[in-house]
Each structure stands twice: as structure tokens, then as C-alpha cells.
Length: 273
Image 1 (cartoon, rainbow, N blue to C red):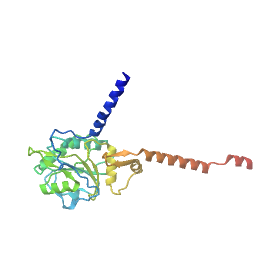
Image 2 (cartoon, helix red, strand yellow):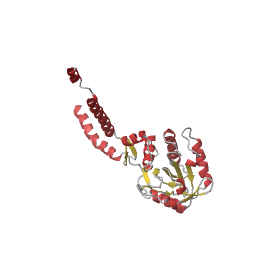
Image 3 (tube, rainbow, N blue to C red):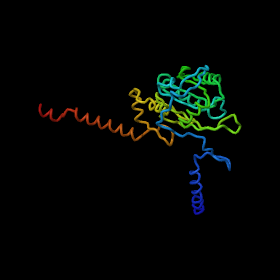
Image 4 (cartoon, helix red, strand yellow):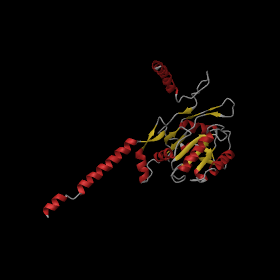
């Protein structure tokens, strides 16, 4: 019986290794090719030409993208009639903003651009109205969450600048695309990508601080920035336990040294008396 159990464990090891190797890979049907034209190609450090990009706002007015910058920007590329991940992505952004200590309009502005050139400003206005109406706290003023539409040329250009690759679906209506939340500096420099539909307030806050490009930080923000670091593989900010341990150790060392320096040598005092 014991030998049989050992044999079963040995036979199971290759299966476990194979399962671990396949973990995280998206399943696809036999013979289905993965479209390499779709995805996110990160262009960290690139400054997009915001002065040259023009769109249409929710009211049908032309707007130069540069006019919406001047503060850190959270950029999302979606299309408003998307039946897939676009609305969940915006809902997650909304949820995280509501839980964040940062204030839309003061610390950052959100810009959502439709990459479907067939969508008009009426749909953009409706989408913004619905998104803001669903928020219960930390609600951004309408001018701090902009929903824009544009022509094929400007859409393609900003998509290429930020590395957002997408293609029209076979049905000729929808699109095949990825999901990403991008953080840009007030000058339009790409600072961070969160290529996921699930993130947390710490991810957003740290990315906005990074996008602040030297903007003043509170003491707590400085401490948090030291305790967190960006993980490019995990696409998230992670708590650096080693930094915390080092910081606590330094504090205790400084306190102990201070105690030794300030402590009055009781023995010598008594002898002198």
C-alpha cells in the first residue's frame, strides 16, 4: 500500500509541473491563432504630442488634448458601445477613485477616449452621465472626467503613441482589444500602465504620484512612496517589506543612540555628590 502511494505521487509530479507551466495562459480553441496586432506595447517615458491631437467633447465642441492636461492624467481608451471589457474597466476605475484619498480635479484628471470613429459625442455624453451618476463618493466634477470622440487619424495616432493595439472584429461592428489604465504627467509623458481590469487604490495613488512629475507631496505620500515599488511583471505596486524593516531598524537605532547620548550617567553624579 505504501509503495503504491509513493508511485502515485511520483506519477503526479510531471502533471503538476505541466499545470504550473500552463498557469496564466489564456485558453484558446484548437487551431485558433493569437492576433499579435492586439495588445499593449508599453512606451514608458514617451511624451505624446498633446498639442497635435484634436478630439470632440461631450457637447460636440472641438478640443485640443493639450487643453485637458496641466495635471496628472489617467487615460483610458475604450469604445462606448463595447459589449466586453470596456465598461468593467471604467467601473473598476470608478470604484477605485471612490475609495481613493486623492481628489479628482485636485490631484488628477481622467480622460476617456473612444477608439471607434463611428461613435458620436451624444454617446460620449451619455456614457459620462451614467458613469458619474453611479458614483456615491469622491465624485469628480464633469469637467474632470472627460469623454471624447474623434476621427480615425487622431484616434490611430494616440493609440500608436501609447502602444494600444486593436483591430476591428470579424462582425465589422465590434473591436478586439486589451484593457489598460495609463498614467501621464501634466506634460503628456507616459509614466505608468496598469494593464488589468482589477487594481486597488494604492495602485492608482502611487501611479498618480509618479505621474505628478515633481509635484509637491505630503509627508504621508512620501512615506508611502518609499514603502511601495512598481512591479513591471505584476503590473501593480507592491509593498516592499524589506524597506519597512530597514526603516523600523534605523528608527530604533537612532532612538537607542539618542537614549545613550541624553542619558545622564547616574553613577558619576552620585560619586561627585
